[in-house]
Length: 270
Image (cartoon, rainbow, N blue to C red; front, side, top):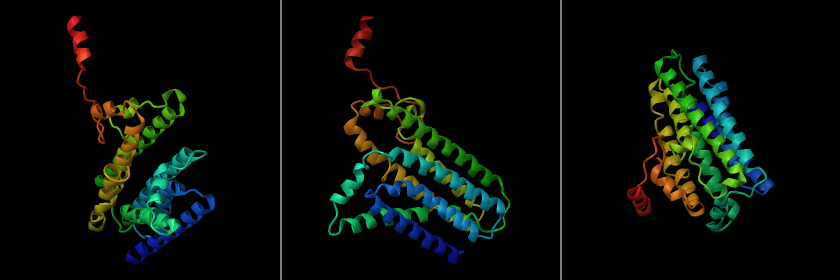
């Protein structure tokens, strides 16, 4: 298994180098957005070919990862196509000391490659050992399904909302977005916790706990939620009110926001 993990690490490095080369050719660093999902698919498929474990676990781990990764890659490609590059890449370049391309490769591409390999460890480890597909694995599949649904539906609702010019400057607070400010991030976290549960048929799989913890941290506290909310707070006038009444990550019923003094006065006169 250790040798095969080294092989997937090498393959991940090749994917990242290829993505960087394509980015230089295109003159856009957001190529990595699409490659993020595809990289997980490549790792899962390579692991499937290398592993000798139960076919049920190998097929399940690979198929669920491929479905998730391909959908995400297509979604991000369509979202970025024909639009200016995400402002975050310009901000990263502005902080470069020395060669800006080397800085971008190190800070963005190599970092994402390392995270990709670490987060995918449950998918890789799940494909080893002859084990029965038991209750914990079925629970993992169910959690994956919940997460995939949240992520896909949340992305779809946001895409439709932003595509309508009349919604410019407004905040999406309907559908799944009524219950959490980031249904797509919540769903993403559930996907990887589900894949982790599938890998828990062995102590080695259970030991990959840092993988879903890392993904959840990045989504909730790292590069996901905080950066998104910082931008929205400065561009959406109603976002502060939305934050006050809507859960930041876990789906929960919206809070009742306090009435303003004018609302209370109108109520007392009625």
